[in-house]
Amino acid sequence: METFLGIDYNVWWYLVFGAVISGYAILDGFDLGAGALHLLLNKELSRRIALNAIGPVWDGNEVWLVIGGGALFAGFPVAYAAIFSAFYVPFMIFLVGLIFRGVAIEFRSKEPGKLWRKTWDVVYCVASITISLSLGLMLGNVALGISLNEQKEFNGDWLSFFNFFSIMVAITTLALFMMHGAIYLVMKTENRLYTKLYILARQFIIFFVLSFVITTLYTLLYIPHLGDFFRAHPSSFIIPVLMVLAIANIPRQLKIGKYRFAFISSAVTIALLLIMVALEVFPYLLYSRDNPANSITVHNAAASAKTMKILLIIALIGTPLVATYTSFVFWTFKGKVKLDETSY
Image (cartoon, rainbow, N blue to C red; front, side):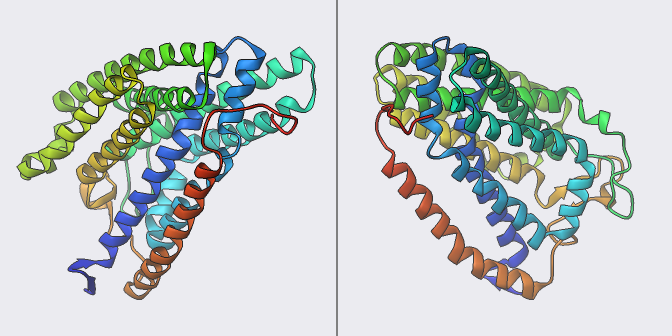
C-alpha cells in the first residue's frame, strides 16, 4: 500500500475529511448559534445588528460543508452511499433547515412590516436550532453505530436514531453552537446589546458544560467501547485534558474582557471534541452495531489508491486557497457592526 510520510493515503484522506468538517463546525457553528439565540433579542435594532454580524460570512462558511460532502463522495464512495441513505430523513430535515435559514436571512429586511419581520425571525431561529440538532443527532449515531447488512446498507429503522446518547449529543451540539455564537456576537456588538449578549454567553457556557458532563458520564457508563482508543493509548489522554482546559478558559477570558481569546478557546473546544470522536471511531467511518464485520472502514470504503493520491494533491492546493479566502473575508469585516443603507 502506497504511503505519504509513512501514512497511507486512505488515512490521509480521513484526516482531510475530518479537518474540513472541523472547519465547517467552527465557522458555521457560530452563525448557527447566533441564529438559535435570535429570538432572545427583543428589539428590532438588536436583531438587525446580530444578523449583520454574520451577514458577510454565513454563506461563505457553508462552503466547508460542500467541500466535506465532496471529500466524502470522492474519497469514500461506499461510506457516502451508506451514510446518505441511512440518514436520509435527518439529512432532509437538515437541508430544509439550511434552505429556510438562508431564505429568512435574505427575505427578512425586504419589507418593513412587523409581522413580516417577526415571521422570518421565527423561521431563522427555528431553522438554526433544527440544523444544529440534526448535525448533533447524526454525529451521535455515527459514533454509536447503526445497523448495517452484509452489503453495507442500512437495514434498521430511522426512529432508532432517536436514542438517548444521540439526543444528548444533539443537545450538547446546540448548546456548544449557542455558546460559540454568543461569544462571536459579543465581539461584534457594543453598549446594551453587548451587555445582554455577555450575560447570554455566560448562561450558554453553563448549558454546554451541563450537557457535556451528562453526555460524557453516559458514554463512560453505557458505551465503553468509545473509550477504547484512549485506554489503549494513555498518552492520548492529553487531548481531553486540553479540551477541558479550553472549556475552562472560555469564562475566564470573557470575565477579563478578552473576547477574541474566548472565541478561540471555543473554536479549539469544537476542534478537540471532533478529534476525540475521530480517534474513538477510527478506522470505522460507519460502525455496524449488530455485526462489526459489516462495518464501513477507511480501507473497505475507499476509492482506488491512484484516486486517493490525486485527491490529496488537489486538497493540498485547494484547501489553503479556501482558508485564505475565508481569512480575508473575516479580516475585511472585522470590528464592531455598524448599520447602513446596505445592511440587512
